[in-house]
Length: 120
Image (cartoon, rainbow, N blue to C red; front, side, top):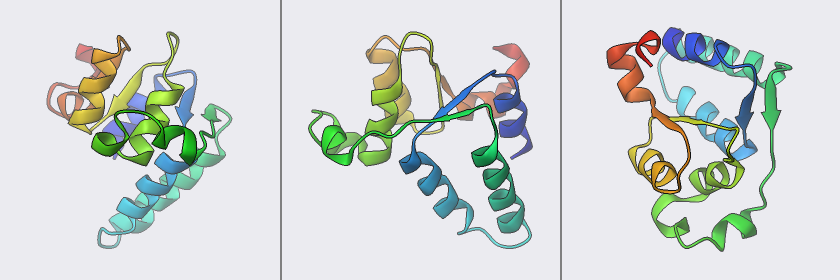
């Protein structure tokens, strides 16, 4: 989690969707204590941060996209908010590859974990 916090702090603005925050919280709550409390606390701090730009994409809009069956709701909402000024950080290989295919800047967090953020 510390690596993720370090990476996020290097950006001036963090774009999220409610779907992604919900999914991250659900995953964090599946781990054992004390990591569960630490992760949910950090998610709460992130959610309240002024650097977070939370964007709502209606589920119906995401479901109309051809990649919806492959990527799912959370990933499609992230694809919808990506623009020329927004890069994607994800551990989801399918989302990462589709973002690159769409011509967007994207980073696979699994690579960052191995190589460190400074190498990017």
